[in-house]
Length: 426
Image (tube, one colour):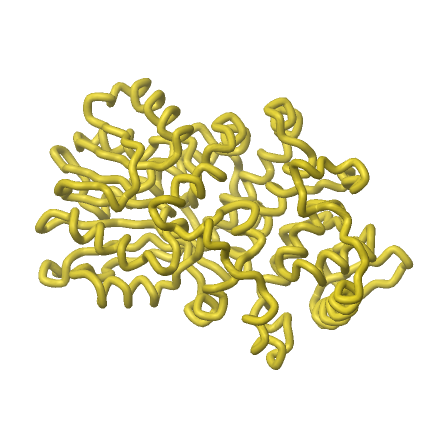
C-alpha cells in the first residue's frame, strides 16, 4: 500500500526559499476567523462520510473507513482556512496530516465533491476561491513557460515511475481493471494498446501523413512510423523533445518523424490524421475553440482526428472553470478539464468536425495511476539523488493519488474521441 507514514515534514526545517507558501501562517484576526470557519466546515463534512479522521487529542470524526491522521491540528486548519482547496493540498505537503491509504481516503472525498460544502455557501464560491493568475493564461507568450514548469522537471524523474514506453497518459488494459488487479509488467503493453487504438481510429497506415499535437516522449511517433506513416509532432517541452528524438532515432525512425518545438497554433500544412493525447487539458477553457479550429484547418479531406482527453461532468466544469486549484498551482499551471458536452458543443459551433466514436476508460486511468505511484514511492532514493526533496515527494505522491481518486470515484473520466467532418460521416 502506498504510504508516507514516516515522512512527516518539520516545518521549522522547510526550505522556504523553495516552498515559500508552506511557511507557517502567522495569526491575525482574519486568520482566526478563517480558521474557525474551516474547522467547522471540514468537521461537518467528514463527519457524515465513511472515513475516520483522527485528531491529536484522540477524537475521531467520521462514520468509519479510510483513515486520515491529523498531526498538527492548528497548522492544518490555519492552512485550510487561508488557502481553502489549495490549503488542503499544501497542508499535506507540509506534513500536517497523513493517510495510510491516501488514495482510498481521497476517493471518498472525491465521490462527494459536489456536496462537501453546503449548497448555500457554494453560491459564495466566486467570492472566496482563488482566481487563475493572468501570468498562467495560455496565450502563446505564456504557454511554453506553463508547459516547462511540469514537463521540463526532469526526464530522469519521470522515468522513475513511467514504464519503458515513457508514456504519460492513461493506459488501456486488456480487461476492465479493478484496484490492484494488474501488475507493473502489464503497463507497457497496456500503453501500446492505448496508442494502437488511437492510430486505428484515425486510420493511420502506410503513407499516412500524421500530425501529433503534444509529443510526450515519442512512443506514438514510433508506433505510427512502424506502420509506414510520416509524422510531424509538436511540443513545447525542450526536455521531452530531446529524449523523444533520442528514442525515435534508437528505434530507427528518424527519417519518418520530425519533432518540432512549436505551439500547436503555429502549425501549417495538411495531414491525413491528427492525434493528440491528453493535451487538451493544458489548452485552457477560452482556447478550446482555437484548438479544435486548428485541428479542423490542418485535417485533409477524408482525414480523421483522434484525441484522448481527461473530462469532468459538465455541471462541475461550469462551476469550477474560474477556480485556481492546488493542481494548477503546483502541477499543471493553466490547465483545465473539459466535459464531453463541451467538446461536442465547441466542435459543433466552431468547426466542421463532429464527435464520432467515444471510449470511456476512467477505471483504466485509476489503475495506471496506482502503478505509477507505486513505482514513484519505490524510487524514493533515486528521486532524491536527482535533487528533489521530501516536500516534492509528498507533493507528487498527493498529485498521483489525488488524480487516482478522481477516476476511481467517477468524478473525472478519460475518453478516446474520434472526430471527422460532418459531411464525411458514415
